[in-house]
Image 1 (cartoon, one colour):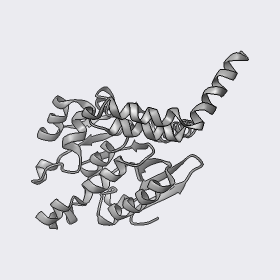
Image 2 (image 1 turned 120 degrees about the horizontal axis):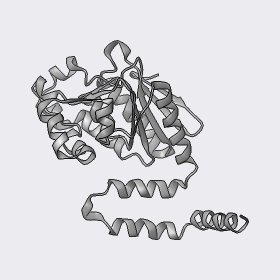
Image 3 (image 1 turned 180 degrees about the vertical axis):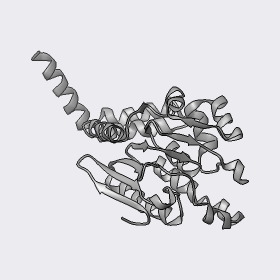
Length: 246
């Protein structure tokens, strides 16, 4: 446990739990620092990350007491933005399990994940304009890529908060399950990812994160590297041998 973040080692993935239940897991500077430390580790170890919150809440937002004291220099430093960019860019997939409130900075942390799984109590959105600020840690560009410009505009401009069924219908989450089942589903996905070729998974993530202008060149460059890998030859040979024995 460090800075409000509980990190547990699982066989095929790392489980990180936002653990400030008395503050509904509000994201403060200590938690951001702990997430940076975790990213530094996962950038080297290259393991799948499952991130969730404790106490029936993912994260109810940024820590307003800290946020109120921040000034222009803090905004330009991108305290939450840089952290969430780092999470988004982790080499292996990031899976977010969203239980209860995922608001403001909590929603923006969720948008940075590759895969999101909700629970029936999920409430997700960006009420920042009601506090006199904007959602500046990824929502204005990530959310419209996920749910489309029309719905993203309503969430960001009118403060609409989406329930679990709305988030599922919009493609913001891929599943809605009870909390224990949601975490089990995340573990199942992490296990499936671990059975695949890590190099191919990482190449796929890099291609997914690339801007439209980078395609198809990035896909071809990544494929060229993989076509020369011993692991590609081994896996394809094993596939053909299994097929021949059926």
